[in-house]
Image (cartoon, rainbow, N blue to C red; front, top):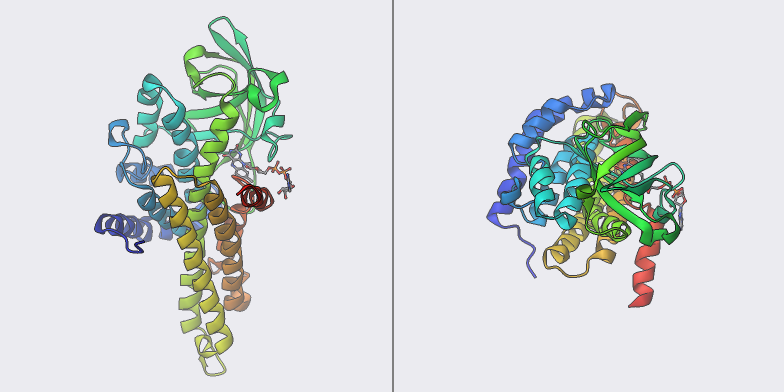
Amino acid sequence: MEFTFSAEQRQIRDTVASFVDEEVVPRAAEIDATDEFPADLVSEMADLGLMGMPFPVEYGGAGLDYHSYVLGLAEIARGSGGLGTVVAAHTSLAGTTIYEFGDGPQKEKYLTSLAAGDDIGAFALSEAESGSDVSSMSTTAERDGDGYVVNGGKLWISNGSVADTVVLFAKTDPDAGRDGISAFVVRPDADEGFVVEGTEEKLGDKGCPTAELRFDDMWLPERRLLGEEGEGFVQALQTLNGGRITIAARSVGIARAALDEATSYAKEREQFDRPIADFQAIQHKLADMDTKARAAELLMHEAADLKMRDESFVKEAAQAKLYASEIAREVANEGIQIHGGYGYTKDFPAERFYRDAKLSEIYEGTSEVLRNTIAQRLLDE
Ligand SMILES: Cc1cc2nc3c(=O)[nH]c(=O)nc-3n(C[C@H](O)[C@H](O)[C@H](O)COP(=O)(O)OP(=O)(O)OC[C@H]3O[C@@H](n4cnc5c(N)ncnc54)[C@H](O)[C@@H]3O)c2cc1C
């Protein structure tokens, strides 16, 4: 068992960290305030290969192993939680579904542009009445000659209003429950009937548009079906299992940002004629924050390791995401506490870390649903 990164993994982490410190951190407050998709930053990230980190070079990706990918993603989220979601939804969800389940021509046509960052991807699974219970979705894709007619709507779709390629889940057999769900590639610019209803106003995760989508008699040719009809539920779950490791990474990045900020503040802020870092109460908070962040990192890398070895990682990915997202919120909360009154204001980024951290406990499997998954696996073992 090795706990050391390779020279290449360290180099990737350091390269992304430098980019984030120079380009993302100085922009993070502005992204948070305006809630605008930072297209220029995303284009710079594409030039660095950060929009296709885990995909093979032959499909326009950077060909990185999963450890390197999560290290890179954690660094991006350290700079901006919203940007972390932009990359995670684009890569771990949209790109990965096409990579894992698309045929040769589909990968050539859609994945290559996604991995190069020329196109932005979104993954449209959730609906107003169907969140944790995926099989209750009501969007339908009805057979129509050599294609399908799609009707329905999706809610809370990250990147949904800026996406060039959307992986969409719809029922091709509404009476078959989870076995009636299929996945399709949608091209919003070309597919008539694709409507962006609007975007959500959110607590945090600013800069990543969270869109409501509607499909009005949207016709899709048969060649847009990913895999076979009825395989969508399993494809979605498998994709989300891997995605959870990257939401753990997003959480680790936010926790690190909160800890770094709190540590430097504690050294500078003086009360009772001494830096507050001299007080043991503050030292213990910092010690707990660092310990939790390190434990979350280890769970994240263990899940990444299992995935890379093609071993079962469902329980470990759920545990990594569950733990990392909960400690990110706790660490960010202590970060605010260490800042005292300033922590509750927008003068410091401590409150942004808290708002950004909270989301990780909700999407790609809520903490409650992840505990169900972990318990089921434990009881089955
Ligand atoms: C900012 C943001 C971005 C998102 N991005 C995407 C995206 O890109 N693509 C996408 O498809 N979706 C996306 N989502 C949707 C997200 O995945 C869902 O919100 C999430 O799965 C929970 O579904 P729900 O909101 O309907 O909550 P519900 O499923 O209604 O759950 C409500 C509460 O009940 C609990 N609960 C539900 N079922 C159980 C159970 N069986 N056991 C115990 N407790 C349970 C939940 O844990 C939760 O506490 C996003 C959401 C947000 C907020």
